[in-house]
Length: 338
Image (cartoon, rainbow, N blue to C red; front, top):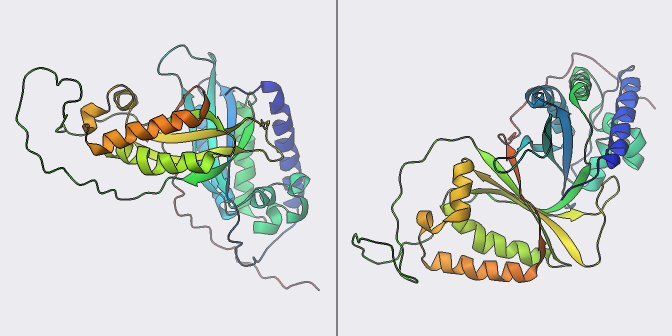
């Protein structure tokens, strides 16, 4: 789903205000202590798009990974990743530019507010109340400044709420059947059993699917995908990341419809060739046992819940993975003011 570039002005202005207020805050020392974690809130993901100077995506990513994200993870956010949008089939939709799409997890919308500067933080107090300031936050400010050098705007950001895919073992018992080699293609409805070649090397991609579904049906929709679609996909090598509906919260470019909900699904593939094989002939990798028949029935139900299917965007890059970070406390002493 395309969003207009005009809306990016709001977000660029907010980022500039955030930087200015951050610089003011860093002119004084702000140490902090923290209260107990707030649990039970509804997680949100901010999915933010960026247009970049051509050939600058890797510089953009490095500024994020080494400068911005260590600070934001100290604030309690968890970065899924920042990925380059690619066009493996068809024409490049933005010739002369790179494009990036970033996914960042927050414990709640209130938590997202608390990671902002005071202009957007409201009663949460903003990022300085969460983690004070110091060289770690200075590094984030420097990373943001570097990213701005390459930025050409944005089609905006969306808040998403839903479910991360669980990393789980899946047991699909083999059928007690025997097979023998045969010539020719199997007839319609014939059993298709498979053996597998070695894993093929390739450059990982992610597929971001968009659908509009019946209003209020997201939990049913997701349960079908989680329990009846993803297991077969995982068996043939795909790795779901998550599935979310668009949340119509402040500071988002989303407009709510009375007739449908908007759903994004993010899945990883070993390569573009892997994605094509899953899309075009999954049975060649997974066979057509009862698990396949269950998937076919599940897809029929999903299609009945679907109002409209949107375009699929393809992303290149590895998930960030929230690596451990050692950020020592500064050798300073403070006393609490009355």
